[in-house]
Amino acid sequence: MTDFFSAPGRFYRGNLHTHSNRSDGALPPEEVCRRYKAEGYDFLALTDHLIGAYDYPITDTAPFRDDTFTTLLGAEVHSGAMQNGELWHLVAVGLPADFDPPDAPGFLPHPGMESAAALAERCRAAGAFVAIAHPQWSGLTQEDARSIEAAHAVEIYNHGCAAGCDRGDGFHMLDLLLSEGSELTAIATDDAHFTEPDHFGGWVMVKALELTPEALLAALKTGHFYASQGPELRDIAVSGDAVEVWSSAAATVIVQGQGSAAAARHGQSMTRASIPLDRFRGSPWIRVTVIDAAGRRAWSNPIWLT
Ligand SMILES: [Zn+2]
Ligand SMILES: [Zn+2]
View 1 (cartoon, rainbow, N blue to C red):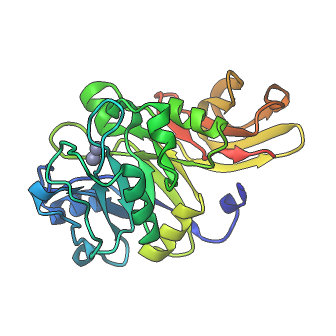
View 2 (view 1 turned 90 degrees about the vertical axis):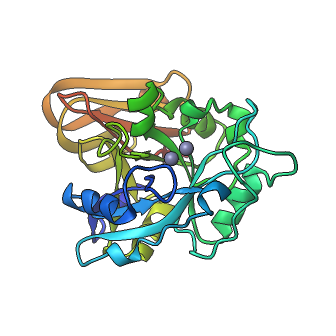
């Protein structure tokens, strides 16, 4: 499950959730792509809001691809109400340009709308990598989240939600769903609109053989990636009684599991940590968090022990 660290290929840095002025972002698609490339990103998914008020955009970013930067087509899709009565938000990366949008005229749900679960299923069937967006910002309940059976991932960090309302985290929801047995992965994103400091703060590092939309999408679906705000994960190896973590210089390395299970190592400029697994005997899964001296974090995908 962590074999991809040492497999052939390299890690590509990308942001999976971004808006342009085709919906409520401030900048044209070309300028958004230019800024991500200039910042050192290898790829970007523009995910404008797929609602009628914006003429259901699946923004074409193919013209902005070159040898060192590529894009995935996608959208933030909306349909159906959450338990709090508000409209669902899901991120779908790898959508076909001709995807049939739901009947979602604006940001309010209406009676008879396609459910979010059904929409997620259609996105997945159309080839997309589907993520539950910003659980904390949405006020998502566990029952809401569990209904999206087609989801591949949960946004565990949304930089825009962190910048704009201090509700950027999704770990709590992810951990609850993992403990129900849902084999979800974990993405960090910007959700950048370029209307506030909401960009270049959370990304994924995807291991692939080549920088193509097809290779990146396949790697996302198989979980060959980790999420970060800065630190690099170099390798993770689970042996019988310990997990070894190799990373860029870390101040803290934490392993989390089901319920209250967690164990940490603290130090200075650690690049390798060994954490005993005895605290995780009752947990079917673990995940790893690496924190650098500036407080920036990197997060592994869940690792299933059984
Ligand atoms: Zn959203
Ligand atoms: Zn968004």
